[in-house]
Amino acid sequence: MNNIKVHILNCGEVGVDPAVPFRDVSKNPIAYTGIGRSKKLRIWLPVTAYLIEHPNGKILIDTGWHSDVRTNPIKHLSPLLYMASKPKLPEEEAVNEQLKKLNIQTKDLDYVFVTHMDCDHSSGLGLVKDANKIMISEEEMKAINKGNVRYAKRFWNGVNVESFKMDKLEYGPFNRGYDVFGDGTILLLDAKGHTEGNIVVMVKNNNKFILLTGDCGYAKDSWENLRMPGPLVNKDDMITSLKWVKNMAHKKECVGVFATHDPDVKEKIVIL
Image (cartoon, rainbow, N blue to C red; front, top):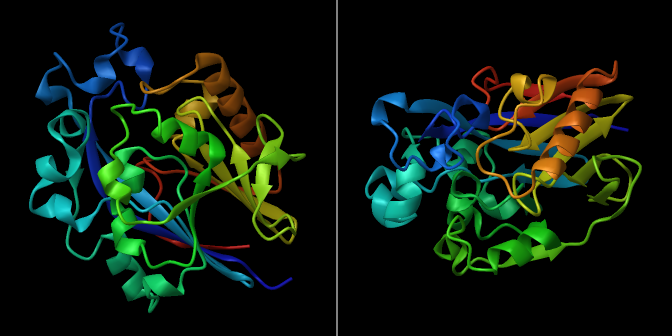
């Protein structure tokens, strides 16, 4: 099969409490929210999106920040979300601007898949609303409709977000996922724990693969030492998901594991 090209795109940064990537840094179970925590503790992590150029189409994974955060971040996010996640979006780093640099218009996208609907992954949905299909897992769709404060529906107002159904697969922490093209090259795998419908994207071709973890792990330390993030819905599921990523990361066919907020992940192109 022809090569698959994966572009790693910088889409700004997010300022968070250190307990967001690693809950073990504080005994306070809600430290990650920033409530009662010193601003001096705040760390800045990258926000990454991924463009997959596949022989069968162009796929965007996650959308980063909307350009509105440059002018009025509190209004765009809400005071509550802003307290937990401070956005920083330099010029030319909004996802549509990054795509434009690659001579790709958002209407040229065959799919946009959002790993989960936290603000730093879904805020930019309005920038890509003319993509052919925008999808999240059924489980994540149910979660965003429960009224949880971590989800801001205004991010996808006027955006046609559909859901995909995960079936039994040989890959993934729970052996469930969605095979986008039916050929095993792009697998959206159930990796719940951080959210109810969080996915890891496995891109597989020519006996090699990479993983795009979303927030199933914030850095290599997450899966190597099973360090859970602050925001999660189920600790057991989170550990199961991290153990699977660790196992896959050590396979000889693995050429990279990329977490959305890992400072060691730089802009580049991976070819499979």
